[in-house]
Amino acid sequence: EAGVTQFPSHSVIEKGQTVTLRCDPISGHDNLYWYRRVMGKEIKFLLHFVKESKQDESGMPNNRFLAERTGGTYSTLKVQPAELEDSGVYFCASSHWTENTGELFFGEGSRLTVL
Amino acid sequence: GEDVEQSLFLSVREGDSSVINCTYTDSSSTYLYWYKQEPGAGLQLLTYIFSNMDMKQDQRLTVLLNKKDKHLSLRIADTQTGDSAIYFCAEMYNQGGKLIFGQGTELSVKP
Image (cartoon, rainbow over all chains, first blue to last red; front, side, top):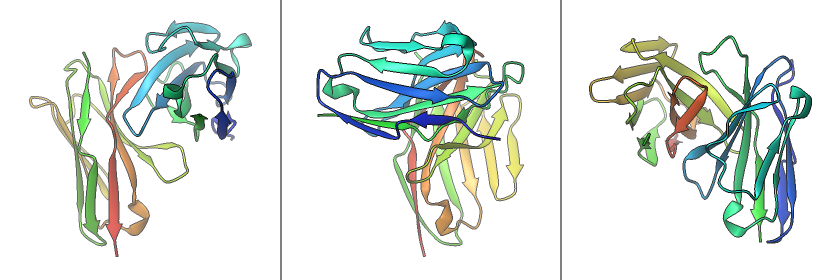
């Protein structure tokens, strides 16, 4: 069974440009999460989808970040326009709705570098 | 607000035991976790403990939970060079699947 996959693995853009990160969760997982780790600090929660609905977006830093999950399958996270402080590793995770032990399955992350 | 703290670095010799410590603030946490990140890889769930347990053992891993002091530890017995990685402690906040992570402890295992 395929795990959580993220694309791209690494993106280098200039300040002011736009980047879209994609996450494909494990098939059948209703919960999808975005997290990020900036500058070697702690991994911080961004938002949580249940199917196509945003359950909790309290961690989204500002309105330059837009997450979507059309059809409740894959999700995209767009940063527009990107700023230097957005550099970091963006992790996606998924879990099964009914097995809420919190066992999140993480992807390998998308490293974003903003120059 | 919720907060999870870990020491940043730990260095041990191969064959020794490693103990990674973590403190958290949310007393209503239901689950606490240890994740491992190897270089260039994603986050791998190592183990988790339910908040009504004091201890959980899984092969070389032992998790101890002190709810009174809000202290969680991970002990790795017979540490190997392949255990070198960053270890993240995390707590589940508000039972919604949202995890609060610590900064990660970089474990270095010397031969």
